[in-house]
Image (cartoon, rainbow, N blue to C red):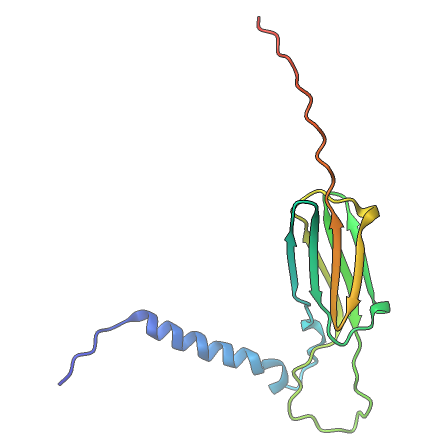
Length: 146
């Protein structure tokens, strides 16, 4: 008889894989409307002078996207991915693409100049460039000793 060392994490990996497979098929297996699941992916990076935000928006017309910068350096991207279903009489066996309205709000890593923000949309990717504000020079304040 061969003894096998028990590894509890091996069992957790198996359970995690089974749960992931279950939830991957969940909206389609019940033929539910998956429109509420659309949440575009966002990448945020910066360099010395600019904050860069890249958003995946495949299948969305740029006229259906709105961008705004709010107080406290909050960027909001709103839009809608419209359904392409033309023939309601089709029988769908699997429907994985999601549709519907979305709103992504992200905190930016630095203070930005909203007036000089640039946005470009091509090949399903929205690229937003937000120039950083120059930090105000800190005034030196003399403290009197009592």
